[in-house]
Length: 145
Image 1 (cartoon, rainbow, N blue to C red):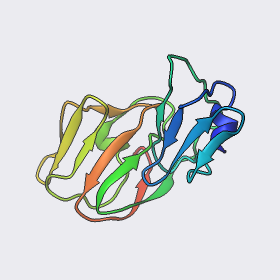
Image 2 (spheres, one colour; image 1 turned 45 degrees about the horizontal axis):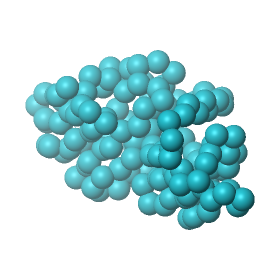
Image 3 (cartoon, rainbow, N blue to C red; image 1 turned 120 degrees about the vertical axis):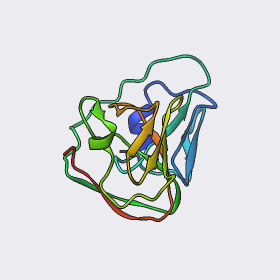
Image 4 (cartoon, helix red, strand yellow; image 1 turned 135 degrees about the horizontal axis):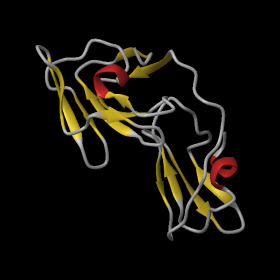
């Protein structure tokens, strides 16, 4: 999926889309231009519209299990589920370290080795993106179990 294919029907000057490492901006008469060439289900995307609008993004559900690659430090984390899933079940399976953290736009939870995830973020919800800080990177699997 391209930014133009996903947002082109509602895009206007100064709208932009950002992944963890790339971005694209909409220019009148040209369309989207920048280093972000595709939108996938492996991460979260920040979208800034120049004016208030609603964009409806439709597509096939993401199949789980879904494997993603995380880096040590901050990661943009998608939610591959079709309904909210409790955080302890929803988080991709990998070895988390003490004080790893996951944040939504307004809530967060911290990982404690003896306890698990604790904080105000209780579940991952479809249509939302999250930031995940991990001490180490590697392969992680969403399985919803």
